[in-house]
Length: 431
Image 1: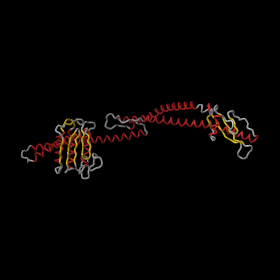
Image 2: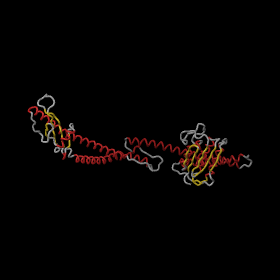
Image 3: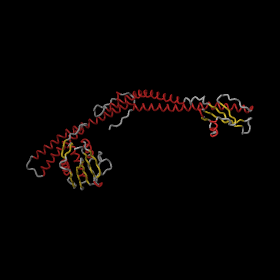
Image 4: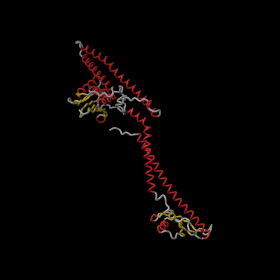
């Protein structure tokens, strides 16, 4: 499954729209709070002015004049309050705003009527009531205001989305072009990026840095390919000379008994080296699939065992092979031979007095020994990783991993039976 792709243009537009909607929500909420607060302060201020007027009149002549505003009434001793208000005032004497029946809305101010200034506390309690339901502006228009603010917010969000899309498209176009140039390189191994094709801003700086990095990578790839090609070409001549010399010497009849066998090993080794050079050259050519063919597995295993025995004659490892003669695999034979030479040769070298068991079951070939195991806690296939007692370069398992990856063979490592030794498993595709 391909990785999910995200569009920076859509993210910029979404962030802009989200910011507009959040701002509109905060603005609308603040507007409602301000409108409600302003309306309540107007009624509270009118009540306070009327209370002051009534107290002055009471202190001057003991009378209560008619309120200046028609919606305000004065109730001495809390007598005569509207029924829907009286119960609420009695239950909540500190509250100043009440909702009555039939849509009525009250503002209440409690105060005391005293005969003269400076008199002892305990005058006549009174209540000023403002029935403001007909004078409310904010509450009756609340639903309409909400609809208006929501519609206005959506309209502004739509406009800002279109504007954001246009701005993001202009700003992101050079970056999108750079991404396409890097991703769609036309099959080239390394993309070609020209800094002068982009604007002189941060994107141009990024394009210049990528262009320089890609140029260095192309130089490295070209040098590696040239080295592999030249090494493969130049080594063929000495290998041919060695093989020809071995064949000429083998024609002599008076050779001692061990010499013909040694000459055959030399000839076989030169053939293997030539095939190895061809394989390494194929691996160096990116995109070239290794040719596969049907091969018998048992002879390749036996050849790897024989090669390991020649390389490590002092090894006392006991080898058992459980690979049927009729096992046929679709693989590239040279790469498989190299992998088995490495894995079996490692067992001969590092588990010299142990047991080596090679078995094939299903589509898996296991190479397990009961020696000291892999003396490392890191990835055994990492380059230059080796045990303390190893005299090699630490590249054998890394080469085996690369060969298996190129040939479509799975390669894993782990401990042997009962946690002792090392075990390598090769998983082949369908036979």
